[in-house]
Image (cartoon, rainbow, N blue to C red; front, side, top):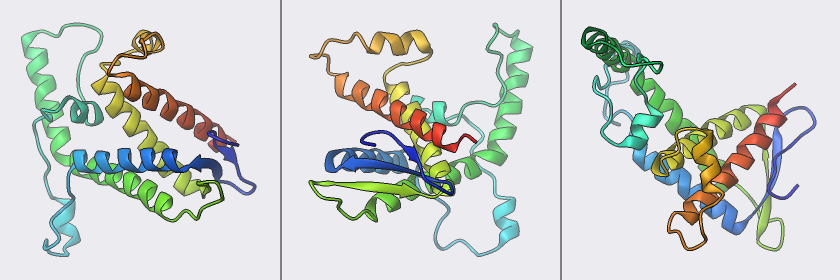
Length: 200
């Protein structure tokens, strides 16, 4: 079971992680939290209607990683839109972002926090490692966080499609991006095996 998620009887998944792996995943999840930013102010009134009608940003983020995590909802990937079409897409995306981005950020924060809390709750299983056991709900949260981590790292590595990923395998060891590439590929393996455990 080392390094791969395996299904648990009755649902959920388990994976054996060593101290270094635990530290890497935790550190990446904390960095993701910092990148996503804080949630609503602690001193905000406890009014569910105010929260329901709270508006988020209307402009896309400047950071390329955040743009990857929170892409425009309306765009034409098949071609170059006319000026009028591009303006209409920007307007629709802006409106959509204004009413959805806060919730999307909250969900990504919750997933990252779930990963951190589950790692913090591990008890050592000898030789500096532990076995992480997740419920089905925790598995879905982990899957969301692993996906966000791979999107973030992939954005920093300029991974856009499968061809870009293939090039990563051929990077020389002395390339400064190599540690990030190794994390990207390792997280991909974890993500793939976790998806398998969630399938019926």
